[in-house]
Image (cartoon, rainbow, N blue to C red; front, side):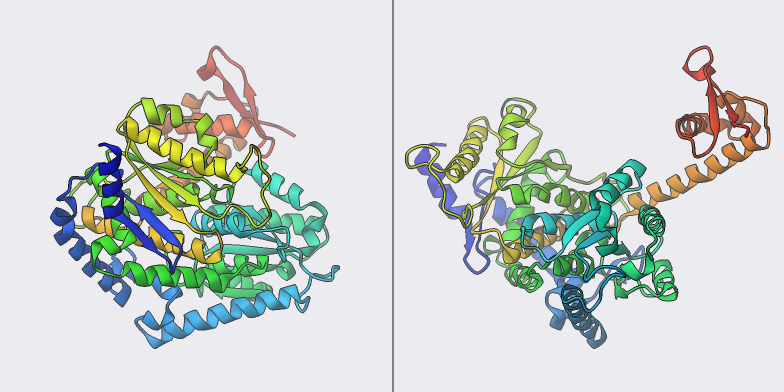
Length: 531
């Protein structure tokens, strides 16, 4: 397509909305001129499904619950007065608590005030807060954020080492809706042990965000923790960043939570519209559908040209992949749906995988995200009349054009400046786009049976480990190969798991298992270490 025709197509499919400072260009997706007309009936069905969702329909039949993240920034739209008031009260409680912490009205035992907070959570309880903290944080933050988001002992050690001597003025935030998330529980126990080792009370340094009556809620209440904040059953982890999960850490850090909520609410208002070409979330969903043929045949590559948006692709991985990666559709038919998401910041990718994007396998579409405002300080000239920010913008445009020349599809999102309102708008834009796309491919975006299956299997591995270690302890002085031990405990069908359990146990001192080298890898023998 020549330059003039491409310009006309650009103007035709260009979306701009000054109220949220956002533009969207889908013109470089390879849809035909009749594409939107053909897809319009499907989009109208998607709008109706979204309207029912926001009105309080049961959207997650697996758990018999509503899905209400949209109400968090527009409480008046909540389906009951009780939910509306809970949202309002919780937001005020978050602000009051953050004020009390910053003012030193709530303070640690030996210090004047809390200066750090440690966010202990995983998945949506970490990805959203981490993204927001990194995107909006400055050297003027009221508290320094730290995150513990895994059950990796070495990772836990690294976080605690980073906190170092500031443990006494660190507030721990333990986040799990169910109160039964194993990784979060482990992190809590490890941190509590570190506080005790330092002669400090973990309970007097901790708050929780959890479901009312959950395990963590009971522990926090009985232990006299500083505060408890609710996480409602109508909020999913991947859409929880506008709840206490994201707002409490942001408020403690000193970020503009009202601005973030305002940006999301404005974007929600815009994306409720049923005129497709004026709805940026609808345009995004249709761009995804066109690229993937509604079957996930292409990956979504997210490249934000702003260091502060570096964690946005990681955040979107959960939002998109957990929402859309489903084995069955709403009718129970096996469809194997989903869109794989990966990405990294520009221009880092000029020196990473853009080579493959331009000349390798054409199994993806790109979303470029640019920010017009570079920074608040005056820019130096790195060349006459050229700043570093000019180069950042030029690399975005140059890469976009280089990909288009080689028949690579792309979407471009541009925001005027990166602030709390634009971050809120970006989150809301993608949340609704995911919902629309799910309707187009007829899957439930609001449950995650595969995640639960993984948790159950992990529990089964831990149970098997218990049997393996117990057998070794009750057979002192004897050694066994993995195959012999599996047969002895009646786990012949799980020899591989037994082998991996023994390898891990013998590599660490905790379980006192000794590995005796044998002939080949699988000839090794394992025995309980005797005192």
